[in-house]
Amino acid sequence: MGNLAGGQPAKLDIEELLATRLLVQGNSGSGKSHLLRRLLEQSAQWVQQVIIDPEGDFVTLSDKYGHLVVEGERTEAELMGIASRIRRHRVSCVLSLEGLDVEQQMRAAAVFLNAMFEAEHEFWYPVLVVVDEAQLFAPAVGGDVSEDARKMSLGAMTNLMCRGRKRGLAGVIATQRLAKLAKNVAAEASNFLMGRTFLDIDMARAADLLGMDRRQAEMFRDLQRGNFVGLGPALSRRPLPIAIGAVETQARSSSPKLMPMPDIVADVEDLIFTPDADELTRPLQRRARPAPRPTTDILAELSRATPLTDAPLARAGGEAARPAMTDEEREERIAAVLGEILADPESGYRTDATLYQDFLVRLRMRRVPGSPMSLSDFRRRVAIARSGVDAETAGSDAWQTALNLSTMVSEDLQGVFLMLACAAIRGEPCPSDARIARAYGTHSARRARRLLGYFEEQDLIIVHADLAGNRIVGIPDLQAETAPGAADAADEEDGSAQAAE
Image 1 (cartoon, rainbow, N blue to C red):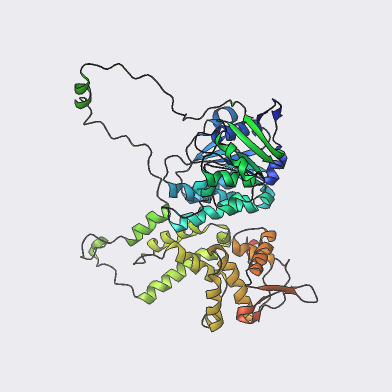
Image 2: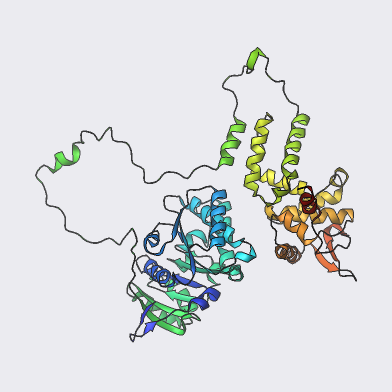
């Protein structure tokens, strides 16, 4: 990384870093970006790297080290697909969020990190995930952004730092102020590089993290640019001053430098107040174009569109407009479209955004009037449909209780919980790992077992086995449990689909 006070080389153990994570702190101008660049350059040939770059400073790594630059101005589905393929093919990349506002940056980073986190087990290769300006993505308190964006981004950062190690994700986060960074994110780092800082609260937290006396905290005010105090199993067992070494690439932006003022010209007033000949006709130059709107939003807007006049639209050949559709007919068509989509054996492995887009297109093709349901309502309907509930069970008080309980978990888990609840209410055999995995949209039986463990941690279910070793899931709030079922049984729907092929 550079040199110690005595001139000896300061080394960082990359393998140890992958298991213990790193936190870098320092005020603006202290050399954080320089430190991160040094770390990335020195380790580029040894480990895959993913950089979350809010200012576009690290895109220059692509010229010398071959990092793929991924612009953040993409839809969520595109970012998810790119992140998944990056893990699968072990390609180092820079997610450049330059030009996006803070809320868009938080959403894009969250989608990208979550997609990397959810990669299949066979692709859990080691990745160094560097997040610059981490206080933007894991703020200690809410700011001007929406609560939904803040929770989404904070959850992704928490997954990276708290649960990412087992999935091969090693978080390296840099922040200007520790006080602005969420404590549960910062607390998971075991290695620290603390740079220059001036506020008392930040100096005190830095001293605490390094195990230093509060009276020694004043030293952080005197650190020069590019000098840090390091501690951690990948660096040193005791705090040591480190001067970061030189780098081979440069950021597109640089620190401001003094330069002489131009000579004063005699006609300065005419120079300033007289416009150029083509100034008024010159097109306005914008710094960055806005992010593209998701296709699902455009389709939803089109579905809500109404004619410009109140007169009925004439059909080809002079026929009268279609008669108004009753609420019952509209609901029947919506249910039929949902049934067609979910009848596809591969629908369980497609993202909700993709299914929703297909749903809106089919509604337009069927000429279903009225405003379409929101993406959140669509996910709820899909979760209920995938549970396999019949009309008799859906009308029971127990099912209403199950619907209320399902709101205690995230939207992507509600379908799995409702499927278990339906089996318990009807006394059916416990779903197998394969069936639970398909309901969650994965082929991984291990992930299905982790879902059951998560539900049990939330006190929603109780998992036990009979004397033959078959699994039983009980739901205390429903006073019901499933019949015994083999956890390793094949998924009947997948089997029937394969037989049909």
